[in-house]
Length: 362
Ligand SMILES: Nc1ncnc2c1ncn2[C@@H]1O[C@H](COP(=O)(O)OP(=O)(O)O)[C@@H](O)[C@H]1O
Ligand SMILES: [Mg+2]
Image 1 (tube, helix red, strand yellow):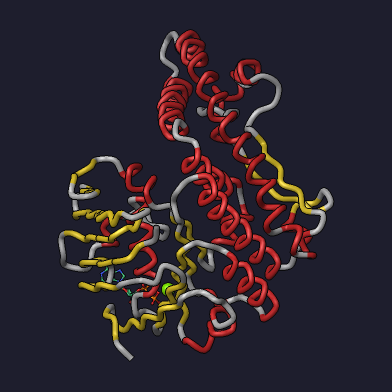
Image 2: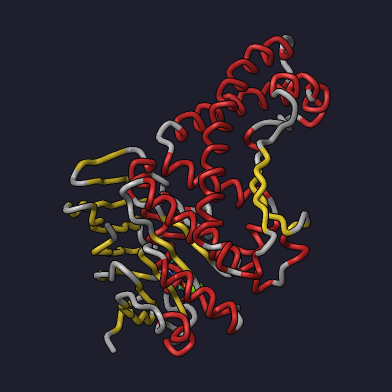
């Protein structure tokens, strides 16, 4: 169910490497600038069709080359499915799944659920709704088949509505009224999927994790759909304001999924170390929920794990990771710095050393 083979070509500073990862834990060790994050980025790229570091696809292609590519074999039940993705300097993406070319990154994404935690994740996640919405939607995407199409259709309508609000052609008010029916119809579908998912996620998260970690006592998860009253009324009431703003201020594109302890936001209560632990806990719980609701094994990428974790947080993280079923790829500068996390885990470990974009054998 995991990636059993991975190869990269002309990806960032990596000219060509191939590896056979462990289905359990993979640790990537190397000095700064050796290519550790690039390796994680390549796995993320395989599932998301883009990077977690940049929107500029050209940065992924090795300097002076014209195309980067990532290939893998994904074990699924008794099948080994070859998958691949490439991108050239013009931005053209090519995909292959089981020897067939495909045009939809979503097909590859469906096959390989990948989440990432980097040293920047905490600020992004607790700093604003965008990352939290992304987190929630990744889960919904993997367990609710219709969600992706609804979300795509909704975004088309939203774009249309925003263009009318910005350009204000003669009859824009009537045109907006026309679009609003579809806007509301799709918004309610999206909301229903999210609501159902969050309710299952919350039960799973408390059962598997929160109830076992005392610092999380009093934790509450809140889902905000992105509007109050009925959405049709909210759109009418906001019309003047939206016209001034030039965009739509209510709807599922404003939804949030946030965390409180005894009624206060977690950012104002928990220490930085505890917030980090919460983020690990959320991502691990989400992977395990996807695994229990589908037949997929998910992947968790953790960049620079030891960099900012204190000893106590490290111990908690180690326990959480040893209980999770995901295939892990963890980077660190030295093997010593990560031994406290990985050694207590009773899972199969493989270690890879990178230097100047190449794998070295030690
Ligand atoms: N498109 C590219 N082509 C070649 N080298 C690159 C490209 N993008 C980044 N690099 C270089 O790749 C190296 C590895 O980066 P990174 O994966 O972030 O290293 P690490 O995570 O090990 O510190 C850096 O030295 C960076 O300058
Ligand atoms: Mg790095």
